[in-house]
Length: 622
Figure 1 (spheres, rainbow, N blue to C red):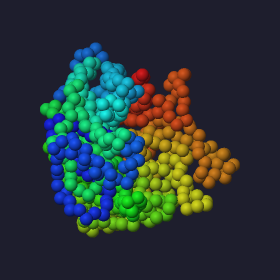
Figure 2 (cartoon, rainbow, N blue to C red):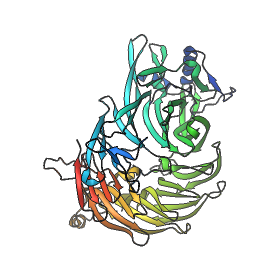
Figure 3 (cartoon, rainbow, N blue to C red):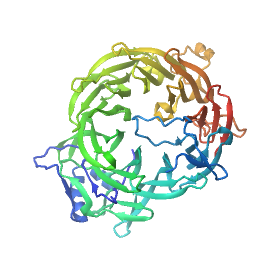
Figure 4 (cartoon, one colour):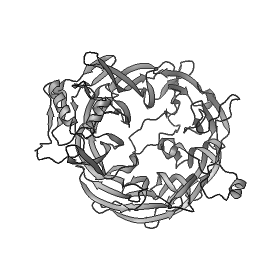
């Protein structure tokens, strides 16, 4: 979780919306927006709500040119618009997600070694590093966007401030956003610098609008020192000009809930340069889903029951959902709702035809009381349809919503792959299920009738009600008959210990159906067959590290996964240090421009022919 600070609104006042920790009360609440007349009134409000929170005492004590570029000599190079290139693997078409690498078909923009590299990548024989951007020791670079001649960089930093006339100093994490004009790739120019309170959470880009989300815990806003209360007034800085939000521009909602954290949503209009922002005092946001029109934030919470003034207990885990409209670059809080259980990741949420769909798990798999659910909510985030108690005793490992269907993978010993009909949002139903060894951590659509699953192979334990995970499993499922899904093809890479960044970061996958390519970075751990036989292998033994790199497959419905070869960056220097779990030569991203495959690690970029995998060249980074 990333903590955040209260943020100033430059053009629009900040809006606070409360969290969902419920308490019995006979008071009447209007659920309407209100504003403060002074900082003192704001302090009184925060103090009153803070004291409702059962653990508040603990916290108080804890205190515009994409088709042109420059070559290494600085002259402009026209990009061939007919050249095809890969994009970041995103969840929603048209909603770009930030990543550590982006390309425009001629240049690669890369985050590595806490620098941002601008690289002339195509054609490969002219590949070279044109420039590097260093954000400074105080900024940890997270990821980037590229939009025409705008390079948008996101990072985390820190701001300190004094409490009670400098008798005590504290600090708040900040989000740093730097926008560079990269028309001249050899000499990028800073166009705008923004720093706002709150640690960087995530971002999305829709056309020329960039949406940035940051967050801070409540106890970083509200301080008690020697019995005196201080509130950290939010700040935002643009091009070294700092602004504090006045109390008359801070809104809160009259509701019977205690605030938990501050979520800040900023929109940057790349066309006009305008920056607007709103802040929402809500539950601690843990998962983000963004559609073409809305931001959905999911907060994992528990009901709190007050037994006496001195005691309370938590039960019934739930997810609070907040819908924030972002139509035409305008931020507007619209609705909130809740569902039982917790979500796995962003792919557990989806919006379709005005309905919001979400998959959750209730309970704990190791306690044996877990189950899984699908809920469908209307635009007001009220539940209108549901399927509950799916696969009791298991938990969700992956989910994917595709139009009128959902696909769900749960797991404990075998992989139940569920196909679910959502065509009637008021009456969703399970159509079919397939039980096979292994599980999928990530589901990716091949087409409307076929799904790719990426996860782990498993072996059932000889004793106990569980299974040992093994190597990476890649499977292709036929769901043309949703009542009888079929595993058409599968491959298994390595033994127990084998891993891939795709299992926890979908952006690491390179898949193109038209080109018929499927490429995945993998760290391979293997056990010798003689050792397996000699030790009567039962699935619980880890393998030894043998390889890290990109596995390249040709994929088709006719032949499934056809192994073409693999590419590694390891062993390229005599003084290279090998690490058991990580090396700077580990490949973490792959992309293509035209017919050239680029594999990327923190140390180098390698270029290979996509058809033959013959090496065309390589480039060392710092």
